[in-house]
Length: 505
Image 1 (cartoon, one colour):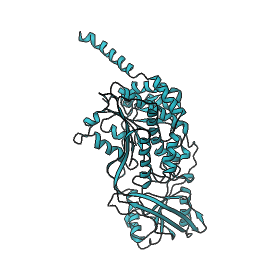
Image 2 (cartoon, rainbow, N blue to C red):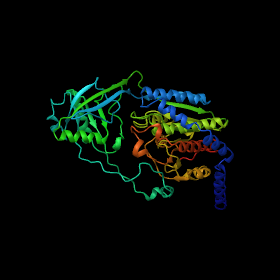
Image 3 (cartoon, rainbow, N blue to C red):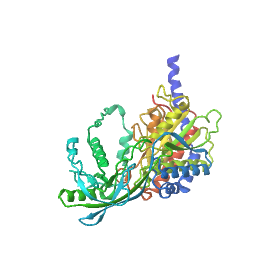
């Protein structure tokens, strides 16, 4: 009898699950109308970028943007809007003046940005450029006594090659088809090889330390990715509360860097002037996330959570528009949409705008650790078991094309069903592929369902990601409206679902 009834039971269970995950088209139509016709997503992005400026973790710009976001979420009627400390972070840092130019053999302003958490020049300085060609500590000793008052440049053997591909691109139908057919069993495990402590980075740090001790002014950096005036600018060293100020490291546009180097290598004296002012902030060493929520209404399910988020912090060379004001604006807009149409979710819906993502997912990892993790097992605790799902957005300004399943095949029919009403907007791909590098990993790492949406990359990796070009002008309004509409629908359906989102096997 058990053999006879088991198939019937399985068919009934699958049918019940499918019925449970049918999209609510009446609600989707309301979401689409509010999200596509009454959108505020670009207004949100404007305040996060142009109005608040760069949002480096711990900086006044981050605090200003986080305070604005908290207030705006409260203004829309969300509950419990707070800046929640997640733990010890370190010093804040701010760039207040930045100028560098070549003054001989002729005058030329240089496209340049200092790395974060580096010191300034202490006023306008005149300096001669010096090539330091030291591949080991023995060679470095030959420069002892020669660095005072100099700006240092290192040799480069690479050359700039023309690019024959467009800076911006959208995912093709073929790309999306390959993603949807991805089979993790058919892909061999990758081996990763990390450089040891004696590599180029260690040698660069030794050069900086000697330069700092001898009274050099700055060191210049460049990368071939920084072509055509686009600078890829990140951190310049440690930022803990006890760390000393890092030596000034200035990133130049590749073309400017190589011009200076060629002149110096030809024994033509190169004179520079530089005036860089930076400020460190050590009064409050804590890190903060922005948290707010729409409370659940079902007596049995209101303690369960559906979460959405993106990282609020950025690098400092621009206003962090595509990385990741875009994702934050979309998630805030999704919450605004749901409030505007008056939903009464069964589960509580919570938004989190994370700090410290750029330095290692600090905000999200500490949030998960503080709220959802059993410190003994390193897996989710009882509170974590009440989390149904976390959705993340952090791959630029492109429209949503689908969602990564992080290897969770149990959720494939659910998300496929929820995407089906948005095929006309270009979103219909689910893939078992993992994707990394952002805050959903904090949840996935302890066994909780955390997902990142698939986006069109546009010019994210070529022009805007961690660059001085990451400004409001690179945001695509239609794409962000589409993304916020889809996120709002996913959040609504997850909050109303009979069961929580399935965990991985």
